[in-house]
Image (cartoon, rainbow, N blue to C red; front, side, top):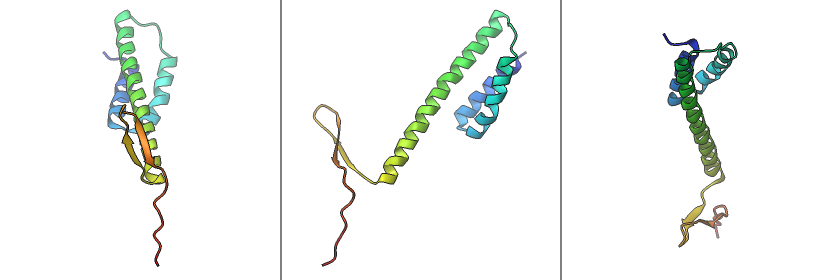
Length: 106
């Protein structure tokens, strides 16, 4: 029979995979409460919980990286286009960092 914490860890995993940040916000305090009230467990149960907690930690790290990448992309989009290329060594080089020139009518 699954432990209540195990169910919460599985629900957290599902929310992470679905990108459901609202569900994560409600699950986090539940996981914390359940963890605080956790009693000593048989080794098999403890191992199972540890594996699920480690899995969720990796998913949370990946989600955080994804959010940071999305934020960076939004900044790039809002600051306008830049022309970038790569040099002979494969390093990224910005060729034009200036805003688009203003067109004048003569």
